[in-house]
Image (tube, rainbow, N blue to C red):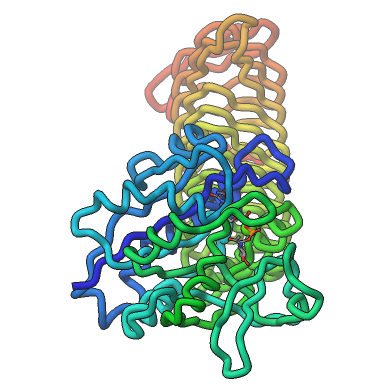
Length: 476
Ligand code: UD1
Ligand code: CA
């Protein structure tokens, strides 16, 4: 039986981010950096490369080493991880040692400790699995991930001797000019033999910069003649986020991956360079996304929709066959066949039922709008419950705020609200009632009645059953 435990280092403040937010909580495609790393770690057992070992390997919840703003990070991830505290940021070697007491208490006790960094969000489970598999098959003391690049930047350089054997990792700060030109760099993913790891870390000297570098263990293992294996990956996957320029570069790569995922799954994206979709968004087949569109949070969009151009959708649920142009939605729910825009705004708590048409310059907040209802031109519905087959005339406003409270407006099925009506809430408009253009409605309107004027008064009451069920002609 193989057993491994994963230690994710996330204690650094991330000074180069110049932020009060701890580095690992900075969002990338709508999810904190650390969550990306944890996703990869948790998916490792399901990786294709790991398939031959999965039945004979036990794993544990990831252990995250925290320091700066530890409580804030812990609050974001809760029970998902185990946590170790690094009291002082004395380097990556010191950080791993902070997890020793937790690793040693795990049952079954892991033979292998997989270490990765909380600031490398592009890492994938497949490459983590490759490192672990190589480590197991080689029975190495250390196996680590490297990448080849022409611009090695501030990555640690992998120094090999003339036979190709790894000798050490030299950090950029301490590298000679010759070593700086080495094109093979340390990606920051390692597997260690647990027993050796603790003894080596305990003996690790502080280096000239006052830190304990995890990377120095490679030189130590090499001088002891131990087996050191490497896996070569792509640089793209192991970009470490140290500053906001690198954050933007990672965002670019990850967004591209997300968009490609949707395109392969049957979504048309007219211009990927001008489309921004968060990692948790779901989109159905044959939906077309037009340029200038940003879809964020846990949004779900049905199939055969047309979204954009110039549309922002945040944390919303959209049914099949919806058309949304140049509009903004936040925490809204749209059933199938809704048509929206151009230039409409659904604020939190909006629910538009089947085939609602919400036209130019409309705003809806905290309201239910029933099926087949039309609201074509510059209207505001706030705190309203609107029935089916209602016509909201141009410029209708629910006057929902009396300066103290937000009040509700109720509009019954089949009602017809004349242009420029002010509905002074709380107020109820009965089914199939009508208001005249410019009416200021302060009192409830009975079903089927017609009201006009300022303040609105009853012009006509329904004479019979028939009268109250007259279909209102819809305006376009
Ligand atoms: C590190 C590696 C470098 C590698 C690069 C890959 C070392 C010494 N260097 O450099 O070889 O090429 O990653 O991305 O390991 N951390 C702690 N406690 C500390 C210091 C750091 O938990 O005391 C955490 C940080 O929060 C971060 C991670 O360890 O998530 C890496 O630290 P960082 O300072 O970013 O290392 P790099 O300079 O990028
Ligand atoms: Ca880093």
